[in-house]
Length: 275
Image 1 (cartoon, rainbow, N blue to C red):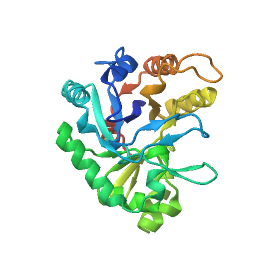
Image 2 (spheres, rainbow, N blue to C red):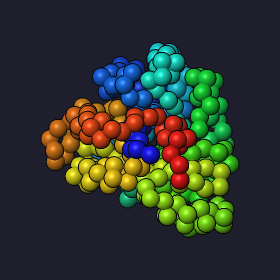
Image 3 (cartoon, rainbow, N blue to C red):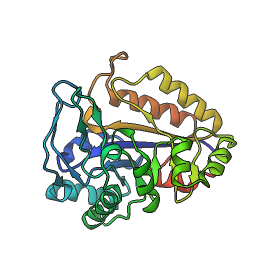
Image 4 (cartoon, helix red, strand yellow):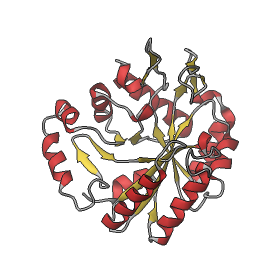
């Protein structure tokens, strides 16, 4: 099986302007499906990149309150341009006295309820049965893993064997089998109640040369390469490359196209790739 390539974009929520998505991916519409990690009830966030000034309001706002965004997403789904993933529930952090931040699916205790409510909101708003989960800040603990397993949601990210075994001891056998796959670590990893796929981040602080090296390794192994990014950073300059994130993404897409990759949404990646 040849290389599969998917784009995962996080943080679409009530606070997203549809034109931000259009600006970030308009040149890719109808060519490459974009998989959006959607926050059902986001809280207003300030100064994302500044640890000292970072602040979140406490009252979450449902994405359904942004009617123009819902209309845009619905039309884009119908045209096959977008697919929807669940990205936490409100993406709210717990802020420690030293200003370090604990992500939602680490510190919250009511995660099964949050997953159910999030699925319901997205289904009612967009008519989709979400099958994939993106943990806020790429962090998920044992409670979160149990919650998505119960909901039979596939995970965009990978977890340690110890956590998997605590959820279900049978997962040890699945983890060992996954390591024998010729595409490892770029293969679909099957476990009890869910699957996992590794993602590679493309952000201003990402190691671009490492990302290219990972892509080349994945290409040789004919695996699944998922690049994770944010629409709101698309025009930001990379810290070392001095090019925009959008430029680097297009460069990566060109390399994938030259390699004969098949461009898919994450749902298709989970469905097609054989472990």
